[in-house]
Every structure is written in C-alpha cells, then in structure tokens.
Length: 151
Image (cartoon, rainbow, N blue to C red; front, side, top):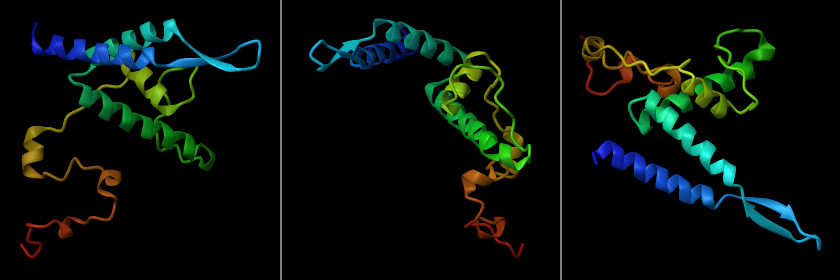
C-alpha cells in the first residue's frame, strides 16, 4: 500500500470515527432528549471528501482553496447592497447558503481550480503573488527587510 493510499485510509478512518460521534437529538415520551447517530451522514461525507481530494493534489490545497473561495463568496454577499460588483458570485446553485459549503461544491464540480504562480515571475519578484488581504494592505514594498530602497 503506497503512502497516498495509507493517507486516504487514515483520513477515512478518522472521518468515520468523528462521524460516528455525530448525534441527532430526538425526543422520548417523557420529554427527555436522547441522542441517535445518523447512519446516512457518514456515507455522504466520506464520498464527498474522496471526490474533493481527487480534484486537488493535497489536503492542504483543498483547505486553502476552499477557505479562499469561501472568503470571496462572503465578500460577494457583503458587497451586494453596495452595488460594486467586484467579486464573482457563486458558480453553483446549492441548498446551503454557507460560503464554505458553496466553495466545496464548486471544487467538487470543478468550477474552481487551484492556480500556482509562475516560477520565473516568483524568482524575479517574490512578493508579486501576495494579494493585498494576505499582506494586510499595510506593507509597502519599501518596508520589506533586506531590500535596499535607495537602489
């Protein structure tokens, strides 16, 4: 068994144990709340994780891509009332209105794919690919340590 298969097996086992602990409240006759495991949730979640990991090269890429796209979707909904139109709307229609769920659905349907910076451009200007929100918008090129601004 190669390392990729072992990694998927470990991920699947940890997901199964986590999902086995997910419980849904139900009511007894006496009004006491009891917990019951939903057997359908486990199958759906594991299938989704396998589909998503097949679309990208690693779990890190999946998490990073989903988080970044979820932020974009959240920003889109936040700026709707302002009429700016700067952000791309959700690319899929889904029952969920949560940005992360929408982002994961977009990745599963291959509507969103990771894009890597060009290696030559990264060598020439290593800070070119850092977007403004990652840098906090407060760092100017002149403030980068190790670079002489007086050239």
